[in-house]
Image (spheres, rainbow, N blue to C red):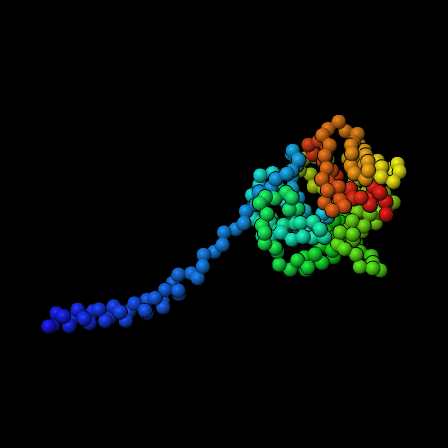
Length: 256
C-alpha cells in the first residue's frame, strides 16, 4: 500500500508540473525566427560598366557607391518613382545603402519601401544640392517655381538645364578614366534641327569629345571605341570605350 501511494503522488506532481512548463515555454523560445534578407544580384550592365547606387531614387541623386555586375545586395523593397521602378538596397562591399534602378536587379523584392512619398519629396528637394555636391561645387538654392512640377521635371530642368552654366559655359557631369568620379566638364551644343545635335565636351585636362544625337537620342561619337548608352528618366547615361562616362539630359540636347 505504501508503494502505490508514493507512485500516485509522483504522477500527480508530474500532471501539475506539465502545464507550468508549457506556460513557461514561450518565454524561452522566440516567438518567430528572424526573416532571411532578400538578396538580389546586379545584372544587365554594359561590359566594364558599374551600377551607380544613389542616395535618393533619382537619376541625379548623389552616388554613394558603384557595384560591378554579379554583386549581391540586400534588397529592402522596390517603389515606383515617377513611373520608374527603383529599389532600396544595402551593400557590404563596398559598404553602402542607397537606391538603384530595378532593371539592373534580379530577382526583385515584391515588397515596397515605407514612406515612399517622403522619399520622393526629399529627392525633389535635394536634386540640385545632390548634383552640385557630386560635381564638387557649392550648392545653390533652387529658384521657386510658379506651378508645382514632378520630381523628374524639376531635376532635369534645374540640375541639367542651362541653369548649370558657369561663366556662360554649359557644364555636364563626365569622367575620363577608370574609377574617376564624375566632374564638371565644359560643353557646347550645335543643334541641327529639332531632334539632331552635336554635344562637344571639353576635358578639364585637355582634349574634347563630340557626341552626336539623332532623333533626340545618343547615336555616336568621334571616338573609335565602343559606344553605348542607357536612360534613366530624361537623362542619357553614355559610356564610350572602357572608361569615358557622360550624363546628358534631354533638355541640354533639345533645349527647353
